[in-house]
Length: 55
Image (tube, rainbow, N blue to C red; front, side, top):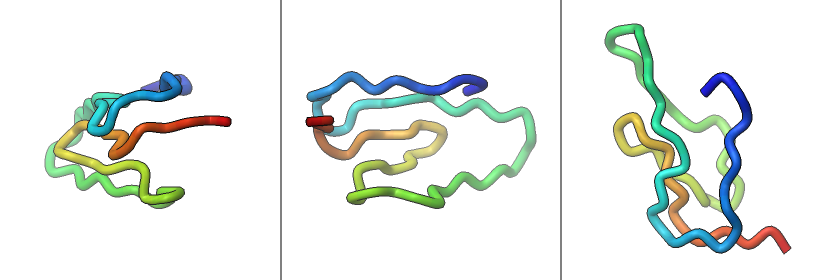
């Protein structure tokens, strides 16, 4: 995405946060920071692995 992504509070596990589109062939995506192991990359999708509570 070209702008910040907003995640709704109290989402369900395995929620797609954002779909990542690339124009370059053979791109490898990886997470450089993953607080609390809350996110996962599945193909071109960034997934919230658990419900997020911001309080």
